[in-house]
Image 1 (tube, one colour):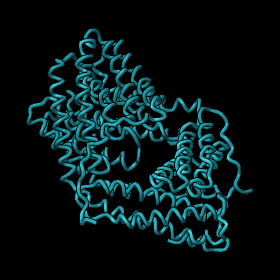
Image 2 (cartoon, helix red, strand yellow):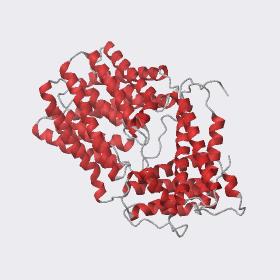
Image 3 (spheres, helix red, strand yellow):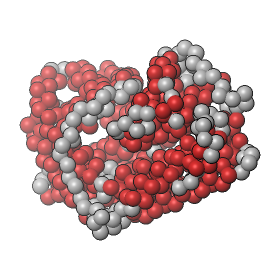
Image 4 (cartoon, one colour):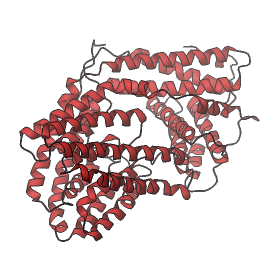
Length: 554
């Protein structure tokens, strides 16, 4: 094994289209429903120049679509407050100074804070990019201190409407997110069971299944502790998915897929049956609900390198844009902010996707600009269409979504006044290239040495969780609650180890990764996980009575 991990910058598959998200239409329809009323009202009043402020609140409707509605209510409220707070800071800064260097610096620091906050809270797509786009654009909007309260008020009002739009589907399908997460876990478990645990690709399928099951448990836990028959039924289905993960050869994949299909719509949750007379398999869920979350400070600490990359890359991209005489340096800043992913390799992929999508997007803008200049209504309707298209397509590949995002961003600049399309296109192309190049250089310059440390911590967590489960398995009569809690802890540790190893493997120069140790830890952890499932009576026990104890050994 080499003494250091070297950077690899692949091009193969970077632009390949994937399958659309199962719920691609939800954010697409939600953003249209959130953006349309404020923009149409401003159109009727002849004040489209205020649309940037209402858009700040309306775009909050993009967030939280995978979260249960109880958790979504909180998450959307925080997104709205974060969006409005960022807008307020930017508008105040814009009203106090016109120094472009100072404004770019403020934008870069805000972008780093938004990146860290979104990653720490795991808010999910679209992450920090939309927040940074709004706050950065606002830095360069002509402003006075007296106008700030009114403009912030418009954003807050539109954000409240976006909150209602995001929560509205819960009236018709109150358990929709949990049902979807459970269905995804069942389908992933079925894919692993189809390999019988030995066929080609079984390791990748096992990791995907473990991740999907863990995500589904987190979805159910996020729904809260309120007693709910539907949630209990979903929990039992997840137990069956865990059985498939532990004993793929003894699982019928078609049955899992049938259960997943039955979760569509609003019908009754299919009964998975009770593997035992008691409900001990669900005891650990209540224990997890009572467990305290890690403090925010601990979740932010590992993100320091990513925040530093974002701050440096955004600042340098903005400064470079200013040196080139571009009138909108925030485009370069936002381009840089959009690049940063979990490691340098993923950042490179995102950079390629961003450049390709933006270049194609300016061609779309060139084609649509004459139409939008005919009437302000055409401008508003075109923006709505691009909003829908961006969310409908971005799940297939980031570059495809940005083909719609780019003309939408260019059209937004015309809400205040009609501008020369040629100049807009030129500045956008220059800022895209500058932002991508400078942003990637900053990612390479700021090394993430903590990636190796995080693997060590993740390995320690897996080994500790496995040893704890093994001790319980060695007892003649382990407490069901303790065994179930131990099983969930081990499953979560294994998922975290897999994600941490994937992130570290694509990082810039660092010490050699303990690949063999990671593989051994995953293998022994999954054997122990299977042993806990058998010990709980959730899966068929092997004919050899001693198999359960053997499975718990490293």
